[in-house]
Length: 312
Image 1 (cartoon, rainbow, N blue to C red):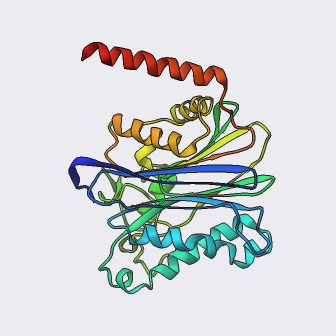
Image 2: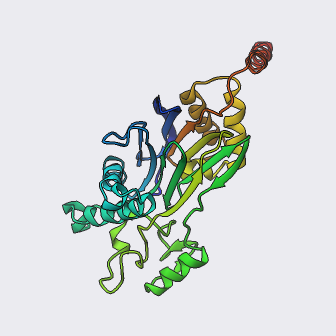
């Protein structure tokens, strides 16, 4: 889980799409890690009466890729098929979907036997015409930008947070070097069943909890974009850094894959040693490319080329 390559793998996976007035771009890179354990999902039409609903999610796996891939493939359906979600109780539906998926996965043979010890963080969003629902479990993060500034962010679930630390201690564990039992760096995750073995405790009372924290934001005309990303991004760029970067690039290009790639490259340059995955989702109020922005970028490129030529 902590092993690194001699040099980073910088090939990127990209994806983009649009629908319901939203546009999105995805970039993910293995980086310095020996395995690519991140996964994601993006959909702008959920079908079956949910055509105007949209779903995006990032999963940051650890100790293997199995759980992160399973969550990317199954979390959406687990949520929208809950009785609560079908009855328009979206918050309870998201909550139930997370817990149901975690319970189902533990019965998969490799996970039940302990042969596979993988787990994953999760951050996801459901976007309707009027609202943005955001859920996180672990330290992957969502940040909403409005008028050029981050106006909302999820809170990373770290073992040193008072409430998380109390639950860990109540479950018979400890927090050492800011990790659960000195090992796991997040206090909430899907999978990680070695930390969920107490039969005396409830599902959300274990050393590591699969319970998501869920937030609701009303949509506004000034909403520009929402960023979902794993800690490989947030470890080296602050919420404000990412918002500033994306906001400025949107005045130059509407290619969200390109902007997402630039964020990932910037994080690699800043020293991120983790897998990196990011989804940028733009709203109708997002900045648009301007002649001035494009001209300034071209002038910068020309100056850089002249400078480089002067060294040759």
